[in-house]
Length: 182
Image (cartoon, rainbow, N blue to C red; front, side, top):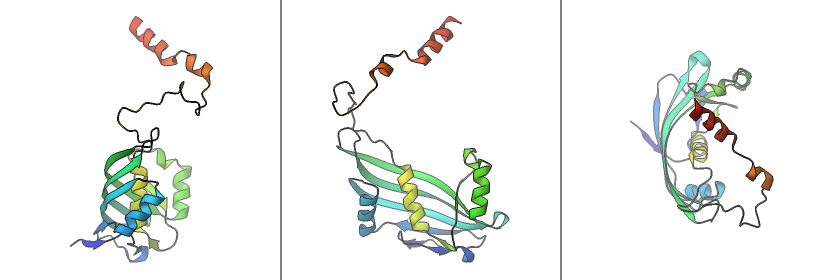
């Protein structure tokens, strides 16, 4: 049975075993308000997650897998008009010792598209709610743009542009011509 929780869900890593445990997380009204301010949102009407947690004894690690759903609004990066967004993302995160994380960094494991995302687990507490909130932050559109809004660089006095760069030919256009000739 899945237990209902909010974003304060924390687990002791030492008590997590190889048996998968499932948790349903739903942000409370106050927690949504805090996330709106923290992530600079216009609004966050819903935010929930389904998370499974289990130990990976062969790696001395904790694996979190799940799915987040959110309905939110962000300010358009150009016009500042509200832009509605639906976030529906699966995630997988492997929490390893700081030494293992350093080793994985040195081996550039983060470049392997098939490997789960990983992070160092400092101490014995797995802040599941915080990890779910961070997953929302990286899953949102980082540059929301209202429909039909375009950045007119030449007409904007507040945007600095290297004009010489704008007049240079696109290097890929030359490659396209070569492809057409073959």
